Length: 133
Image (cartoon, rainbow, N blue to C red; front, side, top):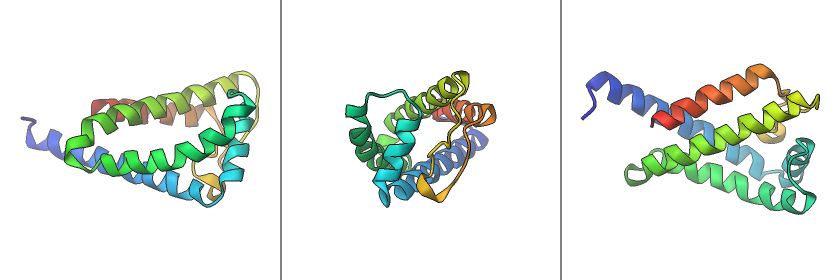
């Protein structure tokens, strides 16, 4: 059993990540073609997988967000969210390393945030927090 402070911190991290994933997924559902363009801009996936990824990722983010607050699925959602955030960080890092200037697409067309090393670092911190869950 975790001490009270650790349990509170764990709950705060879970709820924060749950909100982040649910919001990120929901904002991308409105405009899948713009999200597909964002994915294509990373120049990581073959063209044949871009539309599929744009259709799969937003509902998956929403489900992970919901699972982070649902008791029996918390640990699995923590692992999945850590893998997703780590993958996002790797995708951003490779784009920066290759000199690709792009918006992250993290929150769909609603946010216009450039990929930066700070963004890579924040995703790595979130990956660590998700792994802690």
